[in-house]
Amino acid sequence: MEDELVAIDVHTHLAAPEAIGHMEAMGAYFKREVRGVPIEETVAMYRGMRIHAVLFGVDRETQGERYPGNDYVAELVGRYPETLTGFCSVDPWKGQLAVQEVRRSIEELGLRGVKLMPISQAFYVDDRRFDGLFEEIARLDVPVIIHVGHTGLGAGTPGGGGYRLDFGRPIPHLDELAARYPSMRIIAAHPGWPWHEELLSIMLHKTNVWMDLSGWSPRYIPQSVVRHADTLLQDRILFGTDYPLLTPERWLKDFEELPIRDSVRPKILRENAAKLLGIGGIE
Image 1 (cartoon, rainbow, N blue to C red):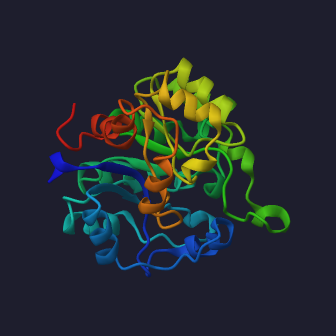
Image 2: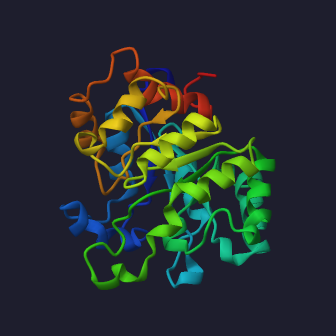
């Protein structure tokens, strides 16, 4: 079935009722009801659309939120390997335990990458205290998805719920990380608004950084991002939804209206991610 894939969604959150957590609270920001969806329903949707999905949660237990665990992600992926690829998540503030958990998740559980969310995990990716974690990710030679730019978490509330946006600024933080670990494959999650120009600059400068277009309906993606996706950065732009906050049906429908050349569309939708993640037989 993999050779028939239409797309690879590199940004899919745990949406099962027992795991959805904070995602439901973001519904108002995305102007839609966000509810828990049984994994069987999610898989049926992706399978019906011939889309492979990269699934993950976010471990922020030191910030007071329960994380279902990487074993849970691995169990779901194990049930539906033809539709799902799993990434682990670790809380950087757990120190050496986080390093050990990344190693276990990749080497023993068979997960294929790492997801970090600096804004909600309250850390700077270039903080030297977390070098051990990134050294292990680089050693394991797996990609890491790192949130950049604005977030719907706490948006529209006094004090933004206590979340600080500067944790997600590309320059200097992501830029320093990419320079420090040139062999590490970094996926910048989302176009990075309001710092999308910074992210584009990083990508033009450092070839170990990719961008996924998740969290935004394509009709709202900044035009400079669209231009670079169609030209200079066409080999490092990835389709992602931020499901369940955005559905693949809605995203793909809006993507049809973007001024992207027909020769580039398959790269964004499938080929770039297939090469990066080793999915679909493309290398």
